[in-house]
Image 1: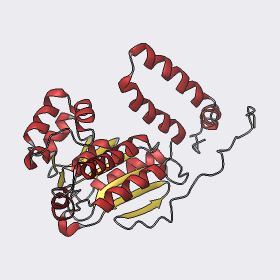
Image 2: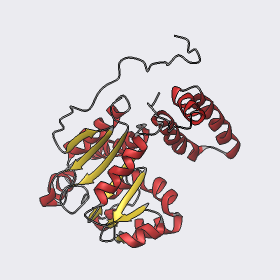
Image 3: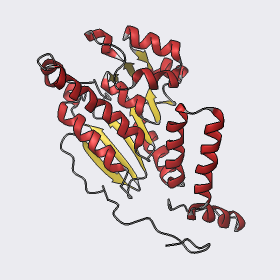
Image 4: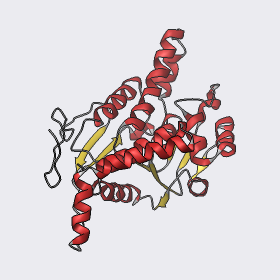
Length: 284
């Protein structure tokens, strides 16, 4: 169907709703376009298991087709974000796997990060307490990070005899905090306190522990009420332009912005400006 100026066009059929999704290994709710994903094993500081890794990966893949989720907040139950891979449910069994099994696991965990970066929704992590190992990776792979002064982020892989190059850490972390600082954290495995994490640029904002989730959700709601199709384009370009030269990036942005200029939201914004009103974006 050809788009005509002044005639709202529609998204193609076949998209999904995740509002009623009932996960097995974490909590998930959707309200006003904002999904909140809660890692929910507070008695163990919310570690991940083989099954929760896989379910998280599949959920983020499904988000690419979810028309009722505009933004997503990740948090942890209790007073911690995520302690990483469960020592008993993951670390122990890994010592008994052969190389094909180990590679299948590391590829699966990497696929979680790929799916987080590929989904069009902005992801905001609300980080309190322990944020370690795979938990630090999930925070790193998010688009925005709200934290607390008492949060402790650590890329612990070297502490268990592994390399720091896990789940994209050597590619993503230097882009957030710089090569030298990323090298220090990935070699040492030391904890990064909340105030230091904000100074280094890992955390976007420090919040009070009792307010960090609400603050993250409020920011996510603000994004959800904006031009969400355009937000998805912004996220895609932030990802893709890492591997582009400047001239190539400028051309890619020209094409991306031209696409956004053909959306209903662009016309809504113009009409609202003329009428001296606030635009009501609908994400198409």
